[in-house]
Length: 181
Ligand SMILES: [Fe+2]
Image (cartoon, rainbow, N blue to C red; front, top):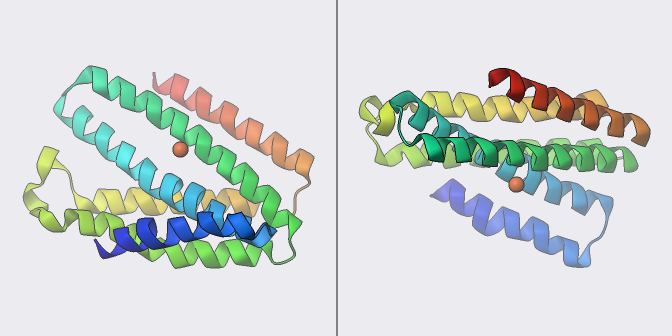
């Protein structure tokens, strides 16, 4: 629970509360990194992934599974908004990229810790729904890397270019979901 406490009891409220008195671009970057990139982008996404994997692998509760697929699709849109926001903020501040990069990397270890600590209560070879911790750690770090790649891709772009990139990504995501059925 150490990592969970650090992220949800310390980092998340601190980053959000700071905005009440600190309206700087850098404070907004730290809040968006904490909330959109780490809590939503790494942990919520991994949680939904676990839900889907567990139900799919076992053919359980198809109605709930369909609901989770829709919630997860909605979540990915919130997160894409977060990337759009961060893209803009990063390009507004000369230290924007560094503030984002530092905070992402500070929070990566506790984010991964939330996942590994969750598994402490389970026998790894015999976990519920036949799941394995490694696949979740892999999924979470892939989410982190994916977001960093988009931020890097959009670094230095104009607002119009950032908007076009966000729309193109949303269209591509919807097409992928449509193709997956
Ligand atoms: Fe969300």
